[in-house]
Length: 274
Image 1: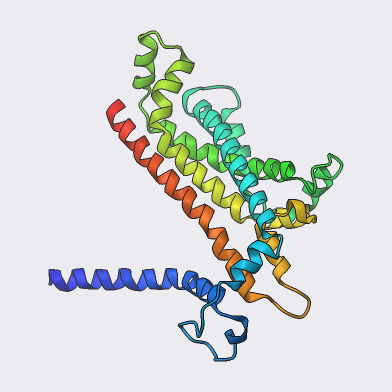
Image 2 (image 1 turned 180 degrees about the vertical axis):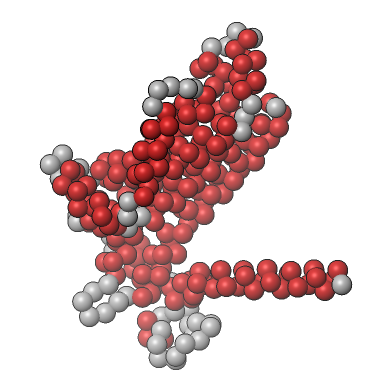
């Protein structure tokens, strides 16, 4: 019975992995299939032929490298800025009592209840007179503002999980509150900061609505909007679009591989410090 149960679990896991990874395989398959064979042989699981011409067109004959660099700039800047603000706010919510604390927390939560479509027009009316449309700085500002509330609650939960005794012991040994925060609490919250970085980076990397409404110049477009350049009035360049999508997966995979290493370091440091 145990063997049958283990076999059943493995089969369910294999089915789930197949279901989850099949769209990724299909994107890669289309990106490697020549245009002449995309529809001529019907729908097949394996490509009828292989070509890297789509990747060459994307990297050499299109503006995708510019879109790619813009998305990297916006995503990294948003993730770093949001994490710093959220860490400071989360620490304040976790460790201090002050007037209006619950009201501020409720207002932060309230900002997450509005559908983005409802507020895109007012945001545009505010951003346009300030010269922040068609600007990467404007996108970073908007993305940071919308990610800070959730990131703050996320960081607060990590600070709440750390006993106050550790911080108080460091202060009794002569550390200031700032020193206790930097030397004791920050190493313990590395997993939380890594999780926040990953969440915000992913949100900024894949965001389309604000970048579509606030950006209309090629030199400051991000890649989600840039993918629309492969759609013309009478045709869709499926091969180039899928090749661009495959290339766009690389930074996210590398970033999470980097974050995973720091997650392990943070958990190890927390075990030793505690």
